[in-house]
Length: 88
Image 1 (cartoon, rainbow, N blue to C red):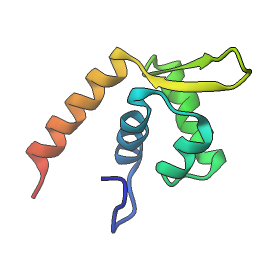
Image 2 (image 1 turned 120 degrees about the vertical axis):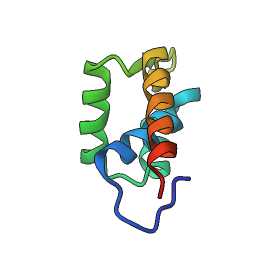
Image 3 (image 1 turned 90 degrees about the vertical axis):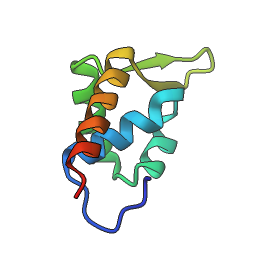
């Protein structure tokens, strides 16, 4: 799902980020799995957090993990429905 043969638009990229972060993921893994530069990923993470689609959890060891919120999962489900409906 994460390898595409065409350039992704912003909605497809957001869907990939939300999908990857459903079970919690560190920023480096998210960056590599979503195939985004660090600066591009920061923009998506910032926007997703502002909109309540993702949260950032700080671990005891000083690291942090990004998680897709329930609101983010609901949006992802709706976007998948639209994608399935619109698929040509």
